[in-house]
Structures are given as C-alpha cells and as structure tokens.
Image 1 (cartoon, chains in turn orange, brown):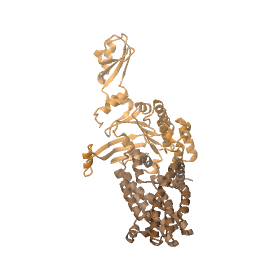
Image 2: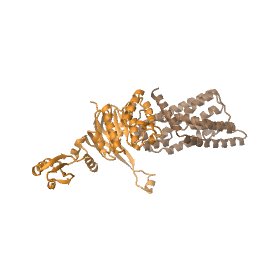
Image 3: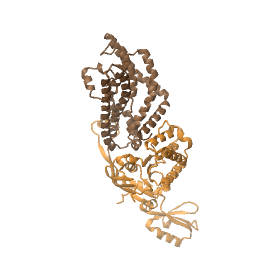
Amino acid sequence: MTPAIEAVGLTRSFTVTERDAGLRSAFGGLFHRPTRTVHAVRDVNLRIEPGEVVGFLGANGAGKTTTLKLLAGLLHPSDGTVQVLGHRPARREPAYLRRMALVMGNRYQLQWDLPAVDSYELNRTIYQIPRDQFRRTRDELVELLELGDLVRKPVRTLSLGERMKAELVGSLLHQPEVLFLDEPTLGLDVVMQRRIRTFVADYNRSRGATVLLTSHYMADIEALCRRVVVIHRGRILYDGELSRLGERFTAHREIEVTPADPAVDLSPYGDCRPCGDGRSRIRVPADEAPSVMAKLLAEVQVTDLTVAAPPIEDVIEQIFASNAEVLP
Amino acid sequence: MTGLPAFYLAAARQSVIQRFSYRASNYLFMAGMLAEPVIYLIVWSTVARAQGGSVGGYTPGSLAAYYIVWTLVRNMNVVYAPAGFEHRIATGRMSGRLLLPLHPIHYDLAGFGGAKVVWIAQWVPVAAVLVLVFRPEFHFTVVGVLVFLVAIWGAFVIRSLFLWLIGLVTFWTTRASALFELYLVLELLLSGRLVPITLLPQWMQNAAAWFPFEWTFGFPIDAVVTPRSPSVLLTGLGVQALWVGIGSLLLAVVWRRAVRRYTGVGA
C-alpha cells in the first residue's frame, strides 16, 4: 500500500543568533552577531499508512511542530525527502494543499471581527467546494462539535474552547485526507478536550483520514492513538504501539497485590507502597517480575494480583527527563 | 461564479462588512488622510499667487483640483503594508495563509480592493466639501475620466506589488519597516504626492521616470486635472501595465526564494 506519509532522512536546521543579556552585548551585536546552528529535526524516518491515527510525542522543543510544518509544506527540509499523499509538501502545490490541513491549537485563522460562518464562506471559495457539499459538511461539522448558533457570533466574542472548535470546523470544510493536529486541545477544559477527541476519532472513522497528532495531554493520545512516535532532540526515539512504549523505556514493572492478611510484610519482594483498600504496589525490575510473582504466590496468601507497566504519563515523563539514546 | 473571481468577490464582500462594522474608525482615518493634501494645497496655492497666479503651469484652481483628486488616489493607494507582514509572522497568521491553496497576495488585493468601496463612499461627501471650499478647476474629458477610472486601480495594483516585495524581506530579517520608510521617502518625492511632478527640477523628473511611483500618484491625478491628449493618456496606462508586469515578475522570483527561507517563527 502506498503510505499516506513517508519521510526519509528528514532534516531541518536553523541558524539562530545568540547574545548575552544587557546593553554591552546589545551594542556589540551591532558589529558582530554570533550565530549557531540548531538541528531542530535530524534524520527522521517515518511511514504512516492511510487512515492511521498516530500520536507524536516529545517535550517542548523536541521537534514535533517543526516536523509537522515540514510535512505540511510550511518549511523546506534542509535534507532528506518527504512525500505526503504522493506530493512533495515543500512545493505547496494547490492540489496538495486542498487535501491536507494543519491545525494549530494556539493560532487564529478565522476573521476576528466576523462570525465564523463568513470565514467558512471564504474558505468555500478558496478550496472551490461545491455549494451543496459545503453546506452539508459545514452543518455536519457544526453539529458534531455542538457549535449551534455560535458560528453566527463574531469570533472575538467566543471563548477559547468555542473558538478552537470553530477553527476546527474551518480547517475541515474541505474534508482533508491528511490532518496534522498540533495540540488541538491546548488550554481547553476536560469536557471540551473529550469532545474534540471524540470528534477527531469520528472524523478518522467516517472519512478514513490519516491523522498525526501532537499533544501534551496523554489522555488525547491514549484515546486516539494505537501507535506513537516519540521524538527527542530532533530524532525519533520510538515508533511503535503505545502499549509497548512502557516495555521499551521502563526497566521495571508494578505488581499490585491484595494479601489476605493486610498486616503481612511485602517489603522483601521489592519497593513496596500501599495504595489503599488493603492493596500494595511492588515495584520490581522487569526481568525479575515473573520470579517475584511466583515467589509471592508461593509464600503469601493473596486474594488478587496484577502486573502492569507504569502509567504512560510516568513513562513519558521519564523519557523526556532522561538523556535517552536514540534507537538505531 | 467559481475559481479566483469567486474568491475575490467573497473576500471583497467580507472586507466591506468588516469596514462597515468600524464606522468611527473609518471617518477618523479619512480625517487624518485629509490633513496632508490640505497643507500641500495651501502651501502651493500661496506660492502660485505669489508668483503672479501660477506655478509651473498650475493655477490655484488647478492645484485645488490636483489635491482634491489626490485624496481619492491616496485612498486607492492604501495597500497592505510591510509592517503587516511583521505582525502576520509574529502571530502565526502568515503560516495559515501559506497553507491555503492560493497565493496570499490575492487575500490582500481582494481585501483592500473591497475596502476601497467603503472608502470611496465616504470620500464623496468629503470631496464635495473640498470642492465648495477650494473651487477647483478640472479638465474633464471622456477619455481622461475613463483612463482615470482604470488608472486608480492600476495604481492600487502597482503599489500592492511593490509593498508586498518589501514585505517579503521579513522572510529574511523579520523586520522590514526601515526599508518601507526609505521607500516612502522616495515615493513622497518622486510620485507627485508631495508636489506635482512637473514642479520638480528636471533632474528629479528624469529620475522619477525610472521608478513606478509616478504611475501610482501623478499619472492618475493628471488624467483629470491637466489637459492631456488621448495618446498620452493611453500610453500612461500602457506604462502602468508595464510596471504591473515588472512587479509581478519580481514578486514571483522573490516569492520562490522567500518561501524557502520561511521559518515560521511565530507559529
């Protein structure tokens, strides 16, 4: 199958000026400005099949947004190649731009002074959407996102969440086949986040759209993505199933046990912490987990026992905080 | 209607709606725009009277006509300025425009083109008052008026193209306002904005011929203010078309390089 997105050796560097704080340094900058090269994205290889929803994870400055901009065609690669839907994005061919959308959670594309419906009408002419199809899609999106008459109020009067939903409608009127979502739930409350998540999942299902999503909210990723790509300092660190991320990056497992006798001492089996209702959580090295469990079952009378990788938030936090090595 | 014409119509319509929602701002803008030509008019009328009734062939009446038409031409010449590029980049709006399947200049041509409808509607009563106060002497001919009606839009397109070119400098430096200031100084001197071209020293008139400025100010104004033959007027439209061609070509070349340089710092 032809991939929807394919990047090989994708690299983007920037030359940035640097100077110290203060007047002396500012004055010196009139004559000489030291620069340094920042490698925002380095040698990224990525292949995403049509209809996949992939989570793109990374700390601030890891290279997520730069990668999305390269895939969308906003930035030209310094090196490497990229194809999206068979197009080279950097050429910014109208035929390509009509098939994709990049939605950034903190950006305004709707006209501030006018109701969103006026901006939608302008988008209809830009994307040359047949009028009937436009009305159908607009009404469907407005209903799915429960916007109602809000699209008839000036955008400046909408709340952040309402505006984000209105922006999302505007970005999807042309029914893009590939959707790049850069933190679409940024700054939204929990209810609104959930609504947008449901909407993205529905959109992916109903249109078969390919979605690449970045978010700092793990709930977004867990709800939408089976596959995640982790980027760290511009390089891909992990590309695989979300469920296996913990196995790859954590060297321990957590055994949750409910002993029949709540007073029994479990500390000889590992790093033990009580977690309420008579249960305890024992942290053990991953390769020792089977033998510890066997020993526990043999020596202690238990009413319940489960083993799990640590919560995904903990794994991600650990990766971002560490100097993890890039996968070969 | 489909394609680019449909977009222009929709964007112009949107721009008109937007302008109408800020009436007070429009009137204040118009008032600010009047101060400049009225000052020039008073200064040059005084000079004309001091020199026995005319200066460089302009009488106080033709000078009044010149600067009253000037107010409309100046309004037509208001286009998207380089400072706007800086704002667009800083706020991330430029990234949004770059992702549309349409060259972003169309957005500005259509938006500012639509705004002209509102400005012209507001200009008519202002011009009527100026006519009553300053008693202008026009030299209307059918060809002159027709050429004027085309030339003011030609002026709008030429100025849009060249200020867009300056705006694109922001793709390299993030700041283009200083270059815009330099452009404004040259334009003020060599366009007919500060003073009719024929009142300039000969060497400045010669220099002006090498720049597009005259075709955005002096030429449209003189089409209805000074007697000119149809061939001169039509040649003027031809020169405007030439500058539109030069501007478009330069823009196409610079644009290709600019988008390669774009770093999307604001978004």
